[in-house]
Structure formats: C-alpha cells, structure tokens
Amino acid sequence: MRGARSGSGTNGWDRIPDAPDEPVQTAPTDPKKLREKLRRSGFAYLQRYSASEAHFAELMEQKLRRWETAGYVALGETRAADLVAELTSEFRELGLLDDAGFAASRVASARRKGTSRLKIALGLRAKGVDGELARTAIDQEGTDETVAALRFCRRRRIGPWRRGERPDRDGLNREIATLARQGFATQLARAVVLLSHEEAEEKLGLV
Image 1 (tube, rainbow, N blue to C red):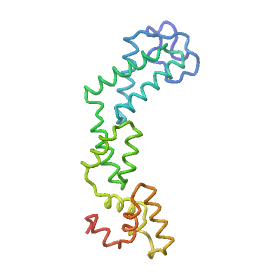
Image 2: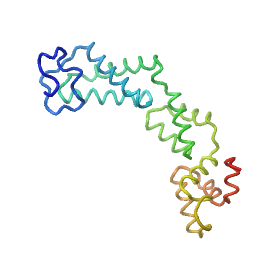
Image 3: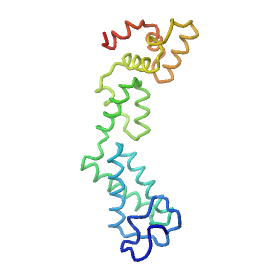
Image 4: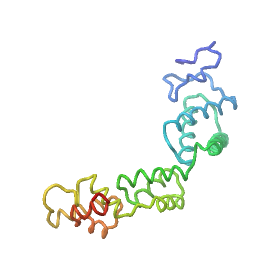
C-alpha cells in the first residue's frame, strides 16, 4: 500500500489515508495506537470546525467505519462506541466540545443573517443539539422575530428593500410565501412585506 511499506517503523499508521487507494494488508488494532489516532483526527477536525457532541461522535464513528472498511482496523460495535464515547467525554472536559456554546454561536450567526426561530431550531436539531438547549439559546440571543424577518428581506431584496414599486397582490403573496418557506409566520410575513423602506429601517435601528 502507498505510504505503508514494511520497515517504516510505524506500520504506516500515521500515513494511511481515510480512503486508501489500495487494500491494507494488515490491520493494526493496538488500543493505545487506535485511541491516539482517533484523538489526533478529532482534534484536527475541531481546530477547523465547531460541532455538537452528538455530531462530533457521529463523525468519529464514521471515520472508524471508513478505517475498518479499508481493512485498517478490526472493530466490533461495542468497541467503536466505547472509543467514541471516551473521546467525546475527554474533549468535553477539555472544553473542546460545548453544546451550549455551540448553540449560542450558531444562533447568533443565523440571526444576523435573518434566520427564523423555526429554521434555527431545526438546524440545531439536525446537528444533534437538545431541543430545550436550542430553545434556551434562541431565547437568550434575544433577536425579535420581526427584526430577523426584516434582515432576511434586506438580504434577499424583497419587501421594504425590493427594487421598484410595490408589486400587485400576486407579487406580495410571492414575497409572503418566500418568508413562510423560511419558517416565518404568515401573519408576520404579511406585515413585514407591507412596511415602507423608512419604517423597516427604523425597526432595524438604521435611522
């Protein structure tokens, strides 16, 4: 295999990619080496990206399965789960995994872009964040739903920021539908698209 020749002194442990081009001839299963390999991989991921505990655990288990499919390691279901749980616990204690902090960061970023409560909550759930924790993060961030809807309108150049004159009824309904698809309540969407540019900027504190 490329990068795993005999005589390397490490059995190619540090050189074997996630998806080898050639079958791995041996399957090192030394627990200490396996834990350290997974630890380095997890740490490298968290240096580049943020993640919830559940999402991180899922990614690490997927990585173990890729290594196993490649013939690099031989794992049972219980052993893989134990390795991932051990790593997740360690990284939580080190502060590298923090679901509350992860949720707060995601909410703040999403609200700046004009994302609705519903869409944020669904996004956090998809990342494995507990529903109650997600609701708390959204509530603590504090952005009013009308303000979020207006930020979305400004980004998409609809409603008070549309170009040209106010559209006819069908055009307004299309704008309302656009907001509704983003998770905003229909009544709120209707009120927002009917605001004048001056009224909308006042609500956003831009005037």
